[in-house]
Image (tube, rainbow, N blue to C red; front, side):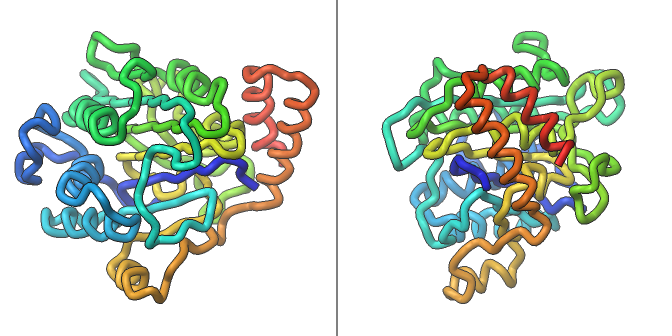
Length: 313
């Protein structure tokens, strides 16, 4: 149903909030990891876990994240979702092991400076994650796009985020490694097309959400996931509230204590199907986009069609 190899870390379940940490020095990260100060609990837990154990399985990474969050008093439960039923005991990797394609990364950090609900650590999260992805995962530092409301980078408005999604997926090929990190507010809205079991769409909250609206999970799926070709790998980290199923992927794993114990013991070797994923809908969308591609349609035209198709079927 999903052609590309897509995996997503989120800091919490759909119904949970994700913590904004006032001072991340309590996490004990090395001094050269990032700028320090405020930051998101999810981003800091991932980077600290990978700093302490660079070579690890998906289960070990989630166990370490869960341990860091619990030790600091955070109740949020990290989630892993994917387009494939991955073996939880397989090696964690961000680079595509299937080829020597391009690397491309998108970083979005929104502190909502001067607005109600202003955050403190999202810019620091981007800086920290960018250092890790380029320094430890070998991503090309010249093939990146950064959106932050810091007065220097491009503003993370609704339109700019959607354009950045197009930039990330444009020209994607088999063997490519793509990465996206988002640190900001996440939300939920009433489902507008009946495809959510809980009646809610999960959302990203852009800088100009009050005038331009939030970005629904359907539009994120259409822009980031549906257009990618087979053999391309996309890794996403969502450090925001209500983000557990924001990519609407067909397989998931909730990093609860019970599930982690089952995975470590071998009782749960693979990720389980997402009961709420609509395979029929995803297949119809994929077939429509493939036919457009065969007919010579451009990526921009296919992207527009993807967002429309998600809401039609």
